[in-house]
Length: 282
Image (cartoon, rainbow, N blue to C red; front, side, top):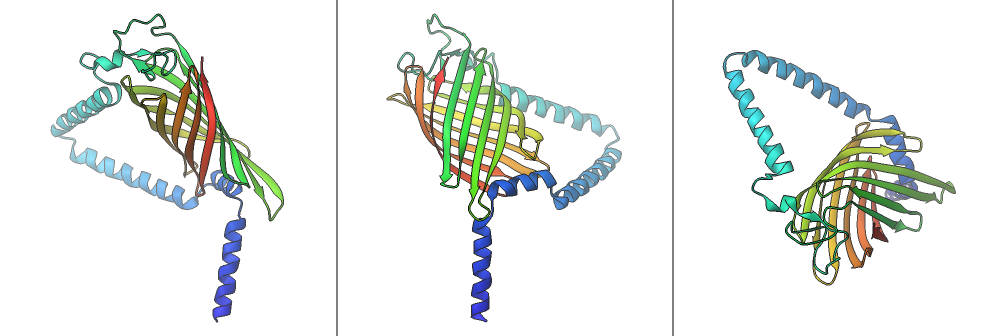
């Protein structure tokens, strides 16, 4: 009996290790999950029935009070939480720098009263990293950020992942695109924090897209070293497609070298990469 159990356990381990993660991600994103769709439809029907019943119960004069309260809370969260109070928060008027540490101290922003001939000019950030999990799974991450001014920016990320399956002796690849509009809610000289909204698209055999949202922050310390972290979340065909990044940068004039860690969750498989690369500011 022990030999049989050991044999079954060995076969299970071999099948797990030999499974192609990229292929599994693409199959799940292409086929979807019947259970998740059923749960979604059930939740939708339940929520619609609950909303209809709550509407009937609140059809009296009290519904206006609750609506006004909900509107005011939502408006307050969006204005002060996501956008900010431009009347009382001076950091929201901070100027965009031509590149971090151009003056030896400032990060992406500098105080609005700073005298600078490059005040509020547009900037383009381009970065490329080689990502590595093991000798059979690696890829490339290309990132571009267009900043027309200090208020908003456009960002696109392109992951091209490769995996070699030793059992089938085949090569597999997956293309992951992320397109976002970003807003820096906090714009201090040494620290910025913001959010992104956009879409995630998986190419190859999947060819599906989903809504995406994210958060990011960057801290600039001495010796021209900065630390950046970001997270983006989305769902495609009922499955999560998430990206988390932790990165350190060493800046030299208008370019830098980077070393970091990237975690991707594409459907059920998880990917953990060491990222090595660099970037330049135009």
